Length: 337
Image (cartoon, rainbow, N blue to C red):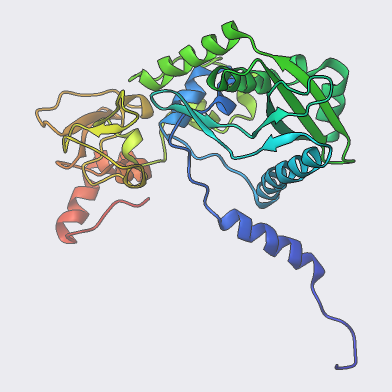
């Protein structure tokens, strides 16, 4: 061991840990799930289902999500120790085409006061502020989106009640309460989900005002209120693709259903969905391409013109004709910015 001043950069440790989590890409779910259905904006849910935006989370937030997932295992272990028959298989439930989700666990027996009745179990972690409000007013008022999630799962499992178990991340306090099945609520939200996944056109937003409290911190705010232009090129943002009643996605261009892993990258025939661009459509005589009018000039999008990624990078350059000159000089060149 060398003598002298210690030179370890302790601050760099947390930065590096956060960076490895930030670099880890999170794949968007292929379905619309009950955990999302409590959100009040139909447009947000449609854009999410269409993979039209990618939620942005820093490394610290991703570590918090990891802690929440690990807390489930801890709670299940504790419940088993007090004699509750808990099975936490993360069972997947399918409610309708493209609408599904996984439950946390089921207490099949041993719940104090009702030993023989099975209950759905829902686990959540909360900040101190959120937890204090939950204890004060109950889950129905404090976290209505969690109630929607439980109601959908109760309909899917045909159970009569759920036990909501919340843990405060700051001091490890635990709050538990029973939520009874409400068929009307479950049916209402599941029918809404079916309408959203079946819609070819983008629904109206909950507010046209970007400063509205539910829009202010929304992950889709820029797409919805500002640029009006998706940054994502995948099968679900393509005008050729349609969700099917078999929970698949059909591509009209290739007349085939596309597996989920291939949906994430799309193909060179991709045409931006008209609701995911800020430009009006022009007339096109091309079967598999679209024409968008950018600053009064027609731009072909698709296999007969500019690729979707090029329009996203710089639509005005594509419309100006300058990019055509460069492409003629340098075959294979693409607009990247």
